[in-house]
Length: 123
Image (cartoon, rainbow, N blue to C red):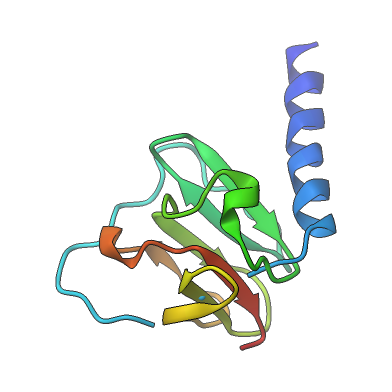
């Protein structure tokens, strides 16, 4: 039963992310966060973001202009781009401020001061 509940919860997150409008290049010298301790799960064709402190994961195929909607504003510390296009992780809402370009296939930690607030597909 627990497995069914977990699967439904994961599917719900993916559905929510796909139905939401979606939203990310700054230079810094600090070491990025390591990969999330939980097993990385990001379906092919999706862009995923994790907030380790809260344990949240977001998977999307569309731009997100404001990560506050998903309670992940300035909390993202790991990204994985499993799409065929470059995404931009912006520090400001509505695709403003410094931007981190995330190439197809790239996955890795995000520096804390980058404070990602929006994600843009095909930037």
